[in-house]
Image 1 (tube, rainbow, N blue to C red):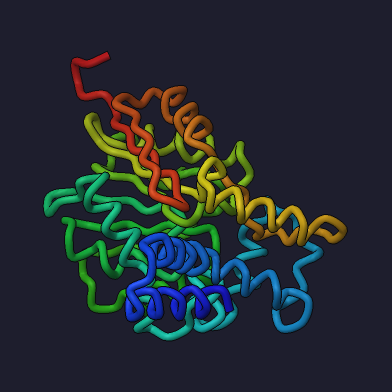
Image 2: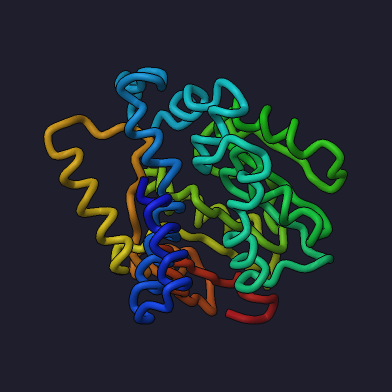
Length: 281
């Protein structure tokens, strides 16, 4: 309802030429509500329609996400809040723009995505790079991704048996990214993936990670609303945990990255960083 209401306010604001604050507020509301729509749908349906997940702990990632991805429609809604292929693809637009601009993905790059889900981003990014590799800890998610990516010959999928990027050798990729994924991980597992990104990147390679920004007004609103909603009930294992620029910057710098930069694009904080080139310490 928040998404629909924001869209209506935005339309009326432009038609009636209201004060600029109204279209701005409506646009912000539309962006934020759309971003968390999938999570909200999961949280609200968890009691009835969705498989009971109370037996799973947060770090049992494979069990949690396999449970949410029994069918393609369920997997798409779990990943992005959109069941139709058309809306699923359009939902990737903002993330793809951020990746192309901030990670500078180009035609010669070999790219790795951590936590690719149903291949929502992959389908749009693969045509822009030399090769795209997708990983996920959920076998069900990867099965749906394989179906969606048929015909894209430069894509490949790898099932992760545990947290980390063990299947890949050092210095294997030009870009490693994780988008709309780290929110679902424990903080120490986030750190592990940043360390692993550094290991598998080639010298001069780039990392891109994002999460909902707790320091933004939109992010804090989501956080405080969740604090009220789950005050007296058990929080579902897929419930997002937000981040700050300081947290992600610390991971990147401690892992050995350089040129670490924080980009605030509400409701997201995005961190980009580079692995030092040969001869640079």
